[in-house]
Structure formats: C-alpha cells, structure tokens
Length: 168
Length: 168
DNA sequence: CTTGACTTGAGACTGAGTCTCAGTACAGAA
DNA sequence: TTCTGTACTGAGACTCAGTCTCAAGTCAAG
Image 1 (cartoon, each protein chain N blue to C red):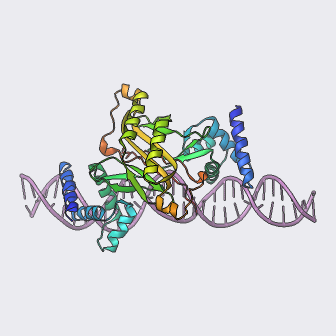
Image 2: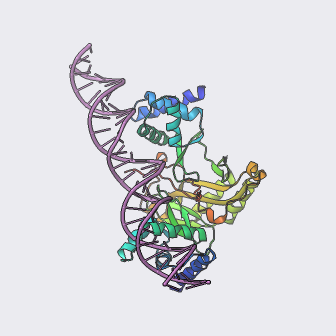
C-alpha cells in the first residue's frame, strides 16, 4: 500500500525537522494507524500491537501519538466518550461530524456555507478564530430504518469540546 | 434572588417525578450553581462548598450533577480541557461557543442561519439530528489587543465532542 | 571508540470520575 | 409514637486514561 509508505515518509520528514528519528516503533504505529483505522483510541492501538506480537509500550504509543498530532497528521478528538479518540488527517481538509448515537458510526462532511457563516459570526464578535468544529448527534439512515429512536433529551448533553493540547 | 428559588423549585418538581427528595445538600448545590457560576467544574463546586463550610462530599456533588443533567437544568460540556465542565441551561435555548485559547473566556452565540444550514446538511445525508453544537477556538478581542497570538496549529486538536451521557 | 542526544519499556503516579458500604434521614403505615 | 422501607450521604477505595520518571539501549557524529 503505497499510501501508507507516503505517510511514513511524511512523518520522517517532520521528525527530521525536529531532530528526531524514525524508529521501528514509530514506523509500526504509523503503518497500523494509516492502513487500518480511521477513528481509533490509544488503547485500541496498544491492543492491536500486542495481538501482532509487536512489543510497544503504552508510553511509546502516547508519545508517538503526540508527535503525530504535532505533525498535523493525526487529530485528537472527542467522539462522545470520556476519553480521547484520534483520527488521521487525510489531505488535511477540515471536516465536521455527524455521529450516530445508536451505532456510533461517524459521517464526515465539509460545508463552505457553514464555514463562511462561522467566520462572519467571529468578525461580528471581534473574535479571531483559529479552529472550529461542528458535531451533530442523531440517528443515521440505516439505524433509523431499523427503528432506532433518538435518545431522550435528558440523555444528551452538550457535545462541545475544545480539546486544546495543553502544555506547560 | 427569586430566580434561584425558582430553579430550586424546578429541581424539586423533577425530583418529585422520580420519587426523589429535595435535600439540604441538593438545595445548597443548586443555589450555588445558579447564583454564582455559569460554566463551572465539579471540583470547583467542591472547593466552593468547602470554603463556605458546607460539608458536601464529592460523591454527592457528582450525583447531584447527574440529576441536574437528567433534569435538563444543567449541561455537561467539554471546554478545552481534559475533564468535564458544566453549564446551567438558562431558558433552555441552544447556543454555541467561541472559546478564547488565551484567557479561557467563553462567548456564547446563537445563529439561525447556522442552524438551518446544519439541518439541510442532515437532510442531505439522511441523518436525523437530535443535538448539535459548534465551537470555535481562537483569540477574543481583549486578548488580541493585548497582543495575544493564536496558538500554533500543531497545538490545536479537533474540538469536537459528543458527550452523550452513557448509561448502562 | 566515545560522547551525547534520542528512545524505549516498565512501572509508578495523577486526577477526574465512579462505586461501595455502613450509617443517617425521612415519609408513610400501624 | 414506633416501625419499616427506601432514599441519601460521606468516606474512602477503586478505575482507568493519560503522564512522568528513570535506567538501559541505540545511533550518528567526531
């Protein structure tokens, strides 16, 4: 799969600019992330690597994810649970999420109208935006056909999250 | 402050429908939440109560917050840190957030155009929305005047979160 | 080689949030 | 009043994602 190799290269370049090295572990993780998963969790990665009998510690996984986030190749997001999810950034295009509360599937979309309108609002409020993200919770088509009902309002809390990567 | 008393009443009604009681602790918490804070954290509440020499345990705080969320009077949100924030729901109107990455202040807004456009997108994707939320990270006017710079892109991760209140 | 900086795994640590359990409070029945 | 059942509470143990530390390993450059 040449695409994955390209990503490895991209990561290597990034590491180079930081005076860091592309190690076996890092290659293995990038390969895993970019060949299989789209949205994934740190623990999931840990498990997959264990299953493949590739020994990579939790610390290394978190460290590598941090590097990938820094490089812009991976994004850290919240998707309705109380821990982080990660998603790789294909092409680097911004996108938003429709999240099915029944099956957990995530539909991505990008909409220029929304983007422009958001920018207008920021201008009006004299706010200088650096990043925005919209999420919609609901029921996907296939779950709706199966008769899934929307979750009761009292079970839905706000879906907002500003997951800045806070550093000291 | 009559508004707070009204909220206490509202909570009492909700508790009644669930066969639950309005206790001293619950009154104290609702009073604290609705008279002082808008966005707050569980630990912050714990601290405030301790300062006021009102003994309320952490367990009770979390339990009461859960009830308040269930009742729809409080929402659980993520606002750029790795733990939950809460905000009380005034009037129950939907709103979105502009979050300053420098001073942490939160500007709220509501925009019908955004809402309608979001609905259109859902229709196109055959997605039945139950809840949506938009957040924008950036620099507020006052911080910008003080020369604050946007956080570097590699320090910003996605700000999305679907904080369903997952129950067994 | 040697040096020095980068890496790693193991495991300790942190901290928000949850759970358990024994004791308390209270409403309604007797 | 007393009794009884259920709700409620605090203390503290527990969980678990994520972070930190440290000793040992690796590698490039001199």
